[in-house]
Amino acid sequence: MATLRLEIVTPETTAYSEDVEMVTLPGSEGELGV
Figure 1: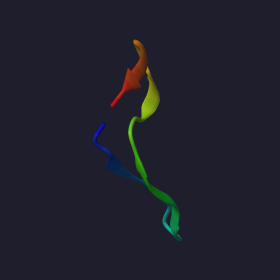
Figure 2: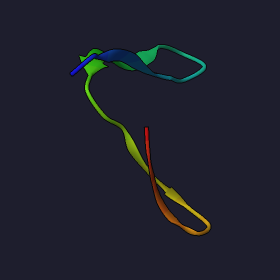
Figure 3: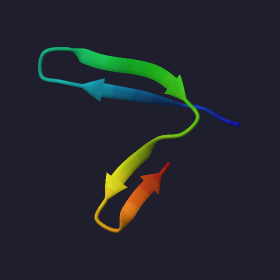
């Protein structure tokens, strides 16, 4: 499976930066997977 770069950035720093295969986020209609 292909990967994508996930970065969680705050005003001060990059809190997380890794290659991931999938990201699952909560949404108004349920979970959203990318």
